[in-house]
Amino acid sequence: MYNFDQVINRKNTNSVKYDGDKMQDPQMIPMWVADMDFETLPEVKEALVKRAEHGIFGYANPTDSYLESVVQWMHTRHDFDIEKEWIVPTPGIVTALKLAVRALTKENDHIMIMKPVYYPFDASINTNKRQIVECPLILEDGEYHCDFELFEKTIVENDVKMFILCNPHNPIGKVWSKDDLKQIGNICKKHHVYVVSDEIHMDFVYQGHTHTPFYNVDESFKEFTLICTAPSKTFNLAALQTSNIIIADEKMREAFIKEKDASGVNNPNIFGLDACEAAYTFGAKWVDELIEYLSGNIDYMIQFFEERLPEIKVIKPEGLYLVWVDMRALNMNHEELEDFMLNQAHLWLDEGYIFGTGGAGFERFNVACPRSILKQALVQLEKAIKER
Image 1 (tube, rainbow, N blue to C red):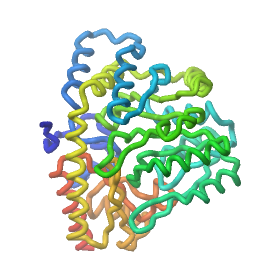
Image 2: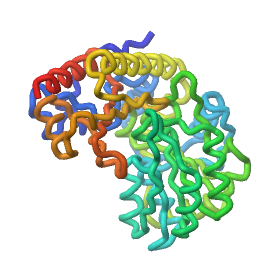
Image 3: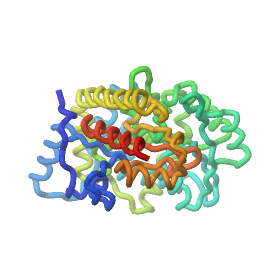
Image 4: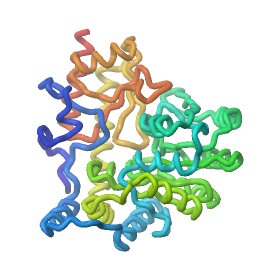
């Protein structure tokens, strides 16, 4: 059994999450950025120590055993069969998104996203002088869905060249069904639209739901899709900046690698490579126990709001360790809500408005923390709401 209840002091460790300016407030609890407050598994730590003790940190490339560990993880965890040759390691998925945009589209091309969605999608498009096209998701009865007629209409009317999919969908926690993915893929195939499928949260899926890699929906989807994967969220390795981009189509892969080389983007560093291989080789049981613990945190949070703050509605996540919470009943605009969370509840959250259309009035909570921290955060929020 792994101990996810252990509270580890992360202050003064050069942590973006714990050492930012907002943490000067001694009551502040950070639940914003998507890294976890859990130690990674022992085998990853051992691999990093072994590498550090060697003392020579020269240039490194992914080894055959590294690539095999990725292949085996995808097969055993997701019934996703890939070839080693399809794997292109990069130092992070956001980097890969920007590379894909530059490799497969031209300046002023239109790229579609479904908001609310992970906000670096916007920057990956805008900073590369492409145009954002939105197909907003629809929230009905506590669940989000896509209007596929609007999806196709938006593609046609804007001559969309690329669609960036988020699955599981950050921040709303939706795990797209195989039927939904088939509709998305068929529309994109019909209109010759590239798909970039960000599946970084693929390992965080809860009971009753299954993650379906985009290639597994239809064999033909390999012809126009690249899939972004990484061990960083699953094993809490974000600072090691290691991702694996899966590109089955040879021409797309060559274009991506060409852009990677032209942009001066290197392979992940030697520590990241060692950590990824160890995680995928030894981490299955650790992840199983982590998912069970996170599911308990989510259940606790939902019950807390239902019993003590029923006006606040939780969008129950199907995946992610990020929980999307509807705060609109507080009747605050987004500036007031952000100020309230920081200065009254003493919670540092990701504000809903940063995720774009449909996000204002929501908050994203990172619940990948010991339950004692989650409990304290919810008590602080309850106190602030009762006293306002």
